[in-house]
Length: 252
Image (tube, rainbow, N blue to C red; front, side):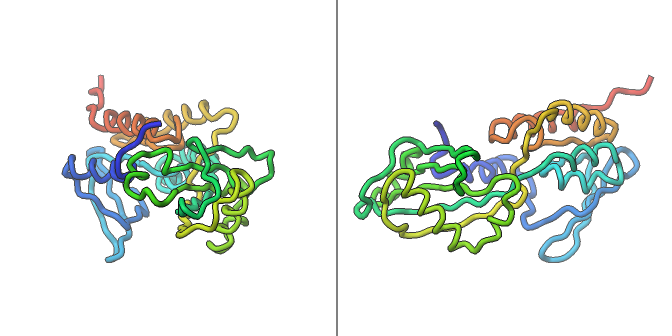
């Protein structure tokens, strides 16, 4: 298991600094409009109000359902296929435990919980064991991350944070033994963030690619297509960049 010292969250920050691009956070794209010359107009909403940007090319690095909304006026076929990809919501409970108070600390990098077991937890990752830099930064604490939420469990995720934290602690104690109460805990919710790859997914992705190929200067990338991991998303991002940077062949 490998990662980045200081956390994977440093990766997009480093990429942003290295490329010198203008990065807009807190910005939601609302519509796309085709312009002459195979260009696009993006209308977005920011904390300061509406924003309009004209672009030579557009890469939609979005969940499938969000990409579907933007493409509805331009490719009903792509919109229908993208909308058919289901997404699960999840909540991540990050907790810090005192090493001195814990009766026992778990070993290994973590564990996965199959749905047939009937538990609230879907996974647990023992961050202080998994990442040496985290243990070195806080040697007196043991930090772990518990995941809650599968497809169809939206009602569970609507529970208050304190209930999710209590459920996570209770099931962790059952799984690995008493660890005491967490010194600190934080719940991070990800709404419709995990694409679900059902039977026929590869064929559906091929149909999406075929439909969007008819839209010049536009490409798709992200977790909904060839894999949800960081490496898979980076690969789709590189492919999308090559696609929009490669000049279209001249008409015969």
